[in-house]
Structures are given as C-alpha cells and as structure tokens.
Amino acid sequence: MPDQSSAAGALDAVLRVARVAPEVFELRPDYRVMLVAVEGIEPGPSDRASEELLVAAEASAVRALAERPVTELPHVAAWREAYRSFGAKPQRTRNSIEALMRRAASGLPRVNRLTDVYNAISVLHRVPLGGEDLARYRGAPRLMRATGEEPFDTIDDGSPVIEHPEPGEVVWCDDAGVTCRRWNWRQGRRTALTEDTTTAVFILDALEPMGDDALRAASDELAAALRRLGSDVALAARLIGAP
Image 1: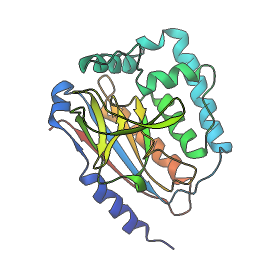
Image 2: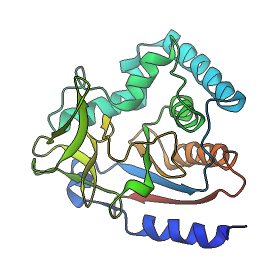
Image 3: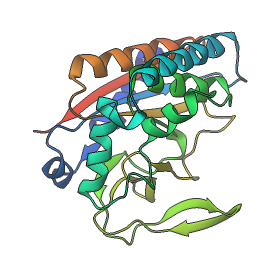
Image 4: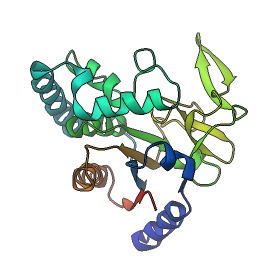
C-alpha cells in the first residue's frame, strides 16, 4: 500500500514553493488563493456521485439567478472588476465562475468524474476553480503579471497553436510557460486534466466579498469529494494571501 503520509509530504513540498507575485497583490490586495494538490486519483467516467453534485449545483444556480442577473452576483461582480483592472474586457472574456454559472442554468457539461466534481463545487460555492495535471507541470505554480513573451499552448479553430498573453495580464505559469490566462479565464492544453490524470492541483481564487471561511469551506468540500476518487488518495492544501 502506498505511504499516504509520504505522498502528502511531497505534495506539500510543491505547494510550499508556489508563489503569487507582489504585483498581483498590488492590483488586488484582497486576493487569496487556496491550492489543493492531490495524488492517487483513480480516473473514471461520470458516476452517480458526480451526477448528484452536478444536479445540486445546477439547482443552486437556478435559485441564485432567479433573484438577480449573473453579473450582479457578488463574487462574479468582484471578478469582473478585477479583469478590468488589468485591461481585460469581462463582457468578452468571462471569469470562470461567471461562465459556469451561465451554463449551469441550462445544464453543466458531463465530462468525467474528476472534472464534474470541481465544476460542481465551483458553482455551489460561487468560486473560480481550475484543475491542472500536476504531473505535466514544470516546477511549481505561480501567479504573475505577464511580460507578453510567455508561451501559452492552446487550440484555435481545432488546431494546436502557441499564443502569448498581453503585457500586464494576470496569468498562472510554471517554468515552461502560461498554464492559465487572465487569472482564471482559459486553461492551457499542456497541463489540462485528461482521462488519465492521477495527480492534480486545484486553484480556488477568491476576492472580497468571499471570506477565508467560505474559501476553506469550498476547498474542504473539494477535498472530501477528491478522497472518494481513489482508495489511496493523498492531499495537501495551502492558502496564500497578501503578506
């Protein structure tokens, strides 16, 4: 049987060197990120547990959007303002929670049980939540403002292409390039979760009015769901905020 404490220690070591650049906190001093790293996932198709989470998330979105437009949901509105702060147009490039909330009312996608779980929890907790294949990372995650020269491996019109972020754009990177553009808008192809992913890192982005307790509640529910995806799942988590 794998040593879960050893695996958790290795994941914790990765998260300890993850960084958020000072210029990101200068842009949004209220920004916090919860990183959750996991090992030992047993890949599989959508199942009963992931379906139940998705149905609950869809119902939650319908209730929320019956009261106000998606753009007036407090955390969505905060992210729209954050996008404007580095020059992005939120009506054209939607933050990930706004994009999911818009889809949830008519039905969230069913992809596989890992993707289904984190999409559902993102909607349930109204928090941008991205998942990356940690085995495909080069170094540790870091959030920074781009120079404009960093490579971003993506798909355009069905074909692989290398794009570059706008100078000053807030991006998640590793040592090989951009892994997610515009904070939480579009994830890259190189580190994307696949049907074979067994080791992953999840990124939960928070701005005011989302508090630390609410952020931890989302990450705790994510961790509980991830533990159900394998018999020997190991986890580590780290909250990063302004110094």
